[in-house]
Length: 121
Image (cartoon, rainbow, N blue to C red; front, side):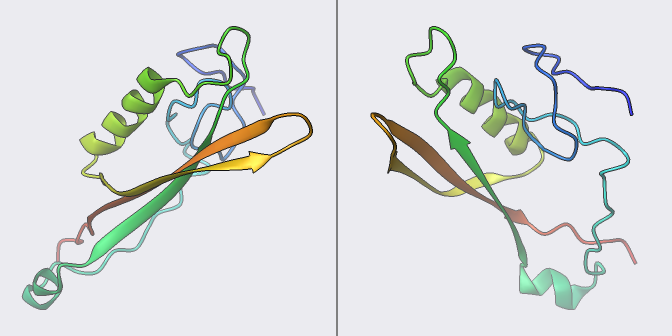
């Protein structure tokens, strides 16, 4: 299998992962890893239910050279905007500190939601 690289930073992508491990930008899912989701049929009953779909992702602070362990606000913004383009909005967001040996790791957990797409009848 051919190796894939991020178009933004050039890092090698991990097959099946939705984000670049270095710059955290969302990457297109390969056709092999793309599993067809089954959504409910577009009926008046299903439209009235206003069903929601959720997605959760975790961003860890990046200890890249020169980053100082800071989250890259521009890259997080780009990722959130790419999801927004697909109809997702931020439902909840939280951060936490994880103690380590001599340092702390910071994580950001983001929960997104959107109206569940309905399949045409």
